[in-house]
Amino acid sequence: PGFDLGSAAPPQSHLLASDVDPDFKEPIKNVTVAVGREAILSCSVTELGHYK
Figure 1 (tube, rainbow, N blue to C red):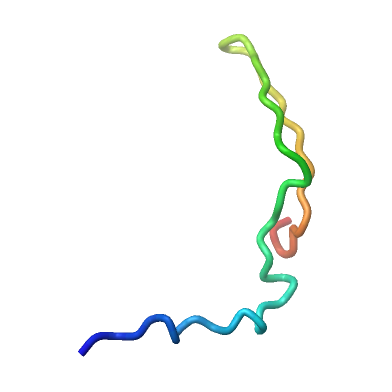
Figure 2: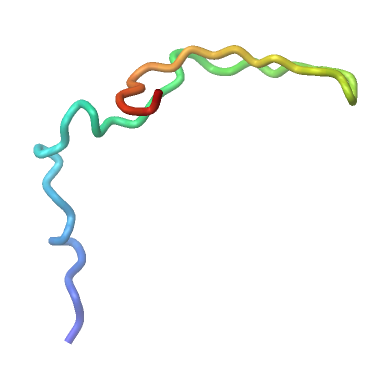
């Protein structure tokens, strides 16, 4: 006998807003930097929830 793992997942309707993964507001741009130099990448993220 096998196991039916499909029924083990909770229904989507039970997800809370805090269960949403963080998301970048816009694409992160490529930055070209000389080897050995510091590169600073800036970004804006939404849906941080408990990821602070």
